[in-house]
Image (tube, rainbow, N blue to C red; front, side):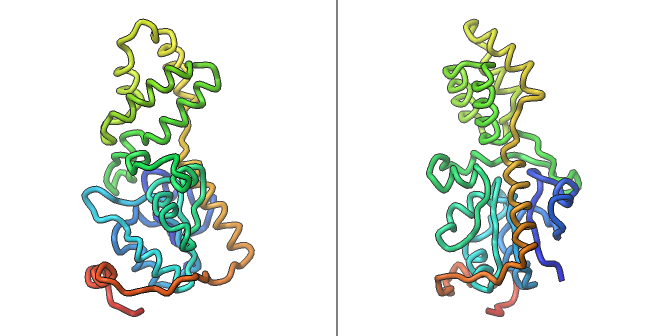
Length: 247
């Protein structure tokens, strides 16, 4: 029996993830996916990527149900970081800087981690850049002396105004190119970006896989929770649409 199931996609491909953790890798999570995997009684479930716009997102209740059945649920990087921040008080284990920022209220908007990506046959290839990656890239550039603090803040503001399906560095720099005052900083940033950019989502996803691997090496015990799982109308909706009620 497979011990661990991981939902991933544009953040980290299964090919990149397998050297970090031997697991069953599944596409980004949507409503019902965690419930169906939990029926298999794995030791752990990890959520990196998940659908949210045109496809119903993974429900909080199915994560709570999985944990109530002794399954450890981890989250990082993208949808996993969001759900882990929302469910940390109930025992979902968040991993990484992005999770910590959501948990602590430093980040609040879902669009910080949202991107546009290709279909399954493309390997869910990312076609835009996450705002959270842009933020950490620009802050690294500031620390390196490539751009000033003022220009970093200006670029963050421009990036945030872009719709998530349009965000990329090319458009970001184009939008900022109107001022002669910033011409030199823009030139330095363009030259620095190819090797300097940060992929915080990827880094956090890898950190989660490594944590799960360490936990598995110590044969961690079934998850224990402090709550009593309650059937609600939303939970009945999940059951009706995604499988039999075996609870």
